Image (cartoon, rainbow, N blue to C red; front, side, top):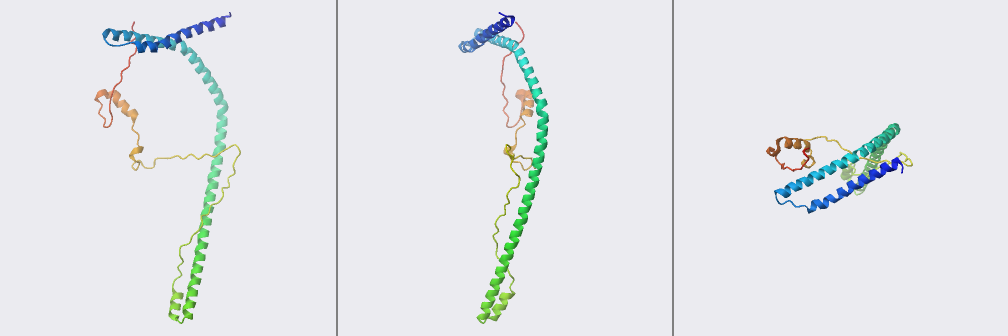
Length: 239
């Protein structure tokens, strides 16, 4: 057996013993009763044993974790050196494409507004023309009926056309699609007025509350905040 194989075998045995001991503790803890002072002390000894085993597990595994972290950091750094310039180039091109899309959208909307205004102008002009022709025809009929006064009143009345219905002008987008790429719209926000922000969107400052509670303990007096404590046991470093 090679030296490497011996080391690996020893490592396996250590890990197996730690695992066997660790897996046995939950059942022992469940079976242990605390009902008097002596059983309380016994439970404390058992708790100290758990903490000691956890320390052994940490001592055994921490070098492995550190080595894995080191390898992970090296791999991440190597990836970053290659990916960083690509990400930079991607951001440059994406920004240029975004600017083009925004400008093209602006041009399209402006053209839609222009065409919409022109369509409205033409519709109103056509409606006025029809109204004027209707007034002339009404005046002619009044004149034919011998009512010259009514005919003159009709002709002298202002031409008032009714409301017009103008179809909405929508132009086709001119930005071409790129194979393999998609455009995703992310809606974001910025707070424009704190005074007008509804109460349900305010978040309590839990960090500040925690600082006050840790400093004041059971003397904390903050409306709407209930202060309580939780206990936990740790090793004292003795015996």
